[in-house]
Length: 137
Length: 352
Image (tube, rainbow over all chains, first blue to last red; front, side, top):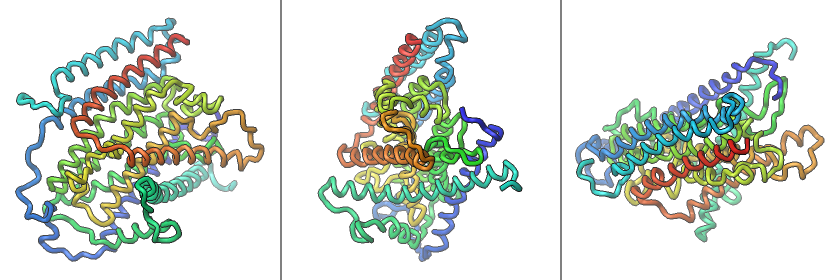
């Protein structure tokens, strides 16, 4: 490890700067295109695009419940996936900490077992089946 | 420089790095578009852009000027603040993640690492987090347009991106297991030594993880064969149907910037980052300038090859059907990623 002659926390400063610069750049682009481009608006032009026909109704209608299901499942499984990262970081040091060679592995196997059971349940419930006609979904 | 404090030097060098990297990234984005059009053209037995400048090299410039001069339309039915916010989120998120990518060997000037904007402990997490925020750009653009095609496109894109994010995140766990760190420099260091044969892709036994990552990354960036959000035969253009002028271009820039980020992450995690594929076979360069430039050359070469692979796949593979896409992500990639974690950790535990 190379030596640092500045505190570690400074490393976050360029990241913050980058976020600010990226935001500024994006806002600048939107602004620039607003001021450079011409504006000749008409009622038809500013209507919603529906292949040249008059738009029928509003877009805020109902859509398949499967999208909500996927969003909920994503949150569940993503939280489970995030729990795996700290374990992965420390995994090679676990034998020294716990004094057992396989402890870390079995520990995670149990956890992954729970995740797999969850996935299996969702799978068998048919929530991942987008092609099937499911009246109850 | 003696009258400047450490902090001022650090700040000035950081701003310099950010400026250079952003200019290079934006240029790379513009020329990736050209590269794609050229390569796709040649693969389909046609020329691709060839009129603007020598070999069409000024095409990105012409496109940029044209898009700036186009009318900036604001649909009446749209939700104005969100409609404007969506491309800003999409583009800025795509440009932020470059900040943690180390693109060269450690080279210090005044104690500041010049080839890595922000060398933090949680680099990989930052990239994962920022790309997740990018989903908001897609979701908001479709919803705020108040257009049926845009809404459907953004729904598809959102559920696709979040589904494949699981497989993507899990495929990286194997690499983190081997490196024992989320810091990207450490992950690269864990693959140094024997060149090609110590890369995670080959020597590290993470080839399955690499392919999971590859497919999940294609889906994450909404690229062929997973480009259903913009399936033009069904959805006109997907979530950016209502956008025009530079706002439209920003979604494309975000897409290509994300491609570059994905290529960078693949290079760092599976292809040994900025290290040479020949390991110690090549003599260590004596001149400090060559020692600084050579790793960048390898890094750029790897990223470039990965981008070419992207384009090659787009020219080769037809589009998925939506139900196939979802079941592929959830029923194939996710279980395989879990199995890969189990196998990797078992091998590591047994080897001690």
